[in-house]
Length: 181
Image (cartoon, rainbow, N blue to C red):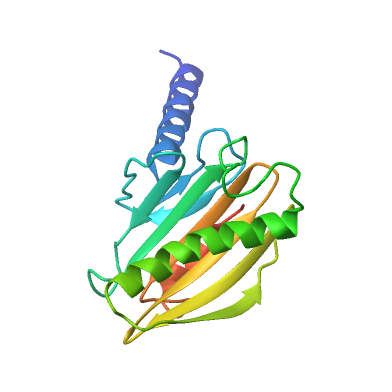
C-alpha cells in the first residue's frame, strides 16, 4: 500500500468519525437538537428526555441542575393548523404570541391554584428574535420560580420553561444562548 493511499484512508476515517460524533452529540456532554420540519435549533445537556406529547414536541434535561425540582424544558408547536382552537387563522403575530402565552401560562396558573399555592407573574423583557417575536416572564410561587420564554416565528411557537434556575447557572445560560427559534 502506498503512502498516499494510507494518508487518504486515514483522512477518510477521521472525517467519518467526526461526522458520526457530531450526529450523536458533542464530546462536552451537550447535544444539538433540530426538531423535524422546523428551522429551530438548540442545545441541551445530555441525557435529553423526549417524552411523548400530543400536538407538540417536548425536550427536557435535568443534568447539572441543583435539585430534582430544577429542570430545563422546551416545547415546540408547528404553526400549521395545529393551534386553531387557540389562535384563529389570520391572527397578527403579536396577537398570536399573546394568545399562545396566555394559553400556556393559564395552565401553570390553574396547576398552582389547584394546589392552593399563591403565585405572582411578571413580564421581564422582549427577546430579540430575527424572524419573529419573543418575550420572557417570571412566575414566582413561594420559594420556587420558573423562567418562561415564548417565541413565535413563521414555522413554530416555542415555550421554554426553566424551573428554579436562571441565567446565573452556566448550563441554563448556554441553553438559552443556543436557542435559534
